Length: 309
Image (tube, rainbow, N blue to C red; front, top):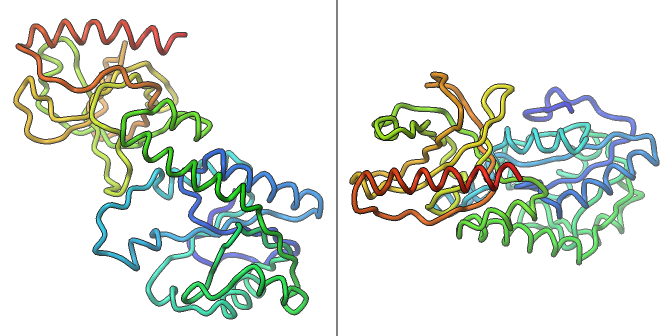
C-alpha cells in the first residue's frame, strides 16, 4: 500500500476507485465498505484509493472539545488498511482553510484532476465540501459531467458502521474489551513507549513495563486488570495489564502497567503493542502488599488460562 501525506506526490491513476472517511477503528462495518471497493476495482482492473482526513476534523473545527477519543492513531489506521489490501491511502491535512473548500472544487480539483476517479463509493447520506453542501444526489445528477460513476453504500450498512463505532467506544469505556474485539474483528490494540516507573512491581515479584501513550486522543479502556498479548519487536508474549491509580501503594497518577510473562529484557525507551483480550477484574485497594501479591499470583493463573485456551 502506498501512503501519501497530501496530494503533492500522488500520480493520477487511469482507473481510481475511491472512498473517503475517517475509518476510525477499521472495524467489521468499515470492512464491508472496503470489500465493495476492492470488488469494483477488480472488476474494472482499477486501483483502490482511500481518502482520510488528519487531524480528525472535529479537533480542528471544535478545538474547545476535549472529549473526542479515537480508536486509532493515523499510523495504526494505516497498518490496518494495509492489511485490508487497499492500494493507496491519501492523508489529506485537515485545516480550517481546507474546510472551506466548495464541493465543486473538491470534485474537480481533487477527485477528478488529481486522483483520476472513475468510480466513487460513498456512504448513505454522505456529505462533503463547505457546509456539507455536496450530496449523492448532486454527484449522481452530474456524474457524466465529472466523468465518473457514483455508488452509494446502503443505509443499513452505514448505520451498521455507526452502531459498531458507538458500541466499540462504549465497550472499551466500560472495560468490555471482548465485545469491542468482536466488533473490530480483532483485539483492541494500544501502542506505547516504555518509560521508567517507581519499580514497585519489581520489589514484589511482578516487574512491570510502564506504558506512555503519546497520542492524547487515544481511547484508553476502563480502569482495571486485563489479560493481554504483548508485541515486542517480532516476539509475542502473554501478560497482565493494569490501568488505574494503584490505590494499595498510594498512587496519585493514572498509570498503564503491564507484567510481561517470562520476560527479562530491558526495554526502556522502546515501543510495544498491547492487544486487549479480556478484563479479569476491577482495580481495588488491598489491605496490604501481601494481599496484593496473593491477588497478582491468582490473576496470573487466570490470565494464563484465558490466553492459552
